Length: 307
Image 1: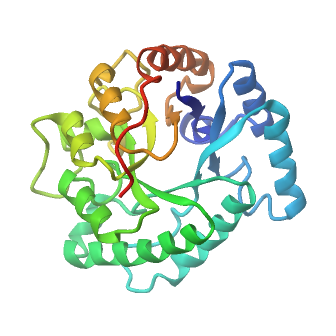
Image 2: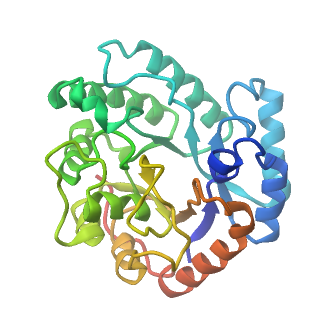
Image 3: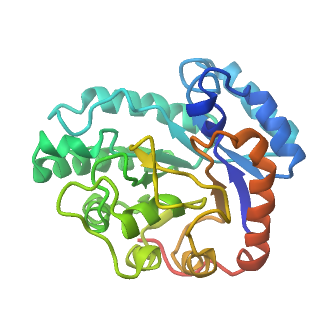
């Protein structure tokens, strides 16, 4: 069986921006719902490098998790104020990354999420070849530094950020070419990338085999999994709509066995309710749904190998 977590960003951004759910309250509810852990959205008001700058404060966060019997499945750090594509100087990005990486290490978190930071429209300002080289060069450095601390980097591709075509995803993972760097397979984003081709810089690129084909192409290159449904639409014309389980078009019966063969180096499944207006009351329903998927497909042994 897989260990189940949920991303805490669902309770701090979007509909919850003006009234976020406190971290301690999230921990208590996830404990009561028998989650195995959480994926930390490391931005205000939840613990992050800036509001929890001391060793003592970080130890308190660890104790809160320990007391609840929860573990961290990963972290989504705040790098969104940085530029990655439309600058040839990655100094500021790397400085912010290192600050977040130290925080990640101090909390004992083993998977660090990254994205390309800037929207796909940036490719109208910077040619794709230059943009890709900048991303790859920076992530090579990030991957090496994370590896020194025993932390994996996982790239969450999605419609809202540049390089969201299947071929681009494969090429960048291959060009970074570091054993602790891989793709995060979010079922919602995978649908929007492989089936809809949402917000892709022209020409549009989809896959005949949809999300299953995308997973097959990424076999051995996936190092983290997030689960949620997709109805094939965008949220605010920016990123994928994270639709509750059973209300969308994702065929979990076919994709989950394939992900079991993908070579993911751990046994976490992370639920992602990002931007869902009823995420807090909907957490229990999401847990029930993912538990059902876990009973059906979670006991299969992870197969495949790392890159």
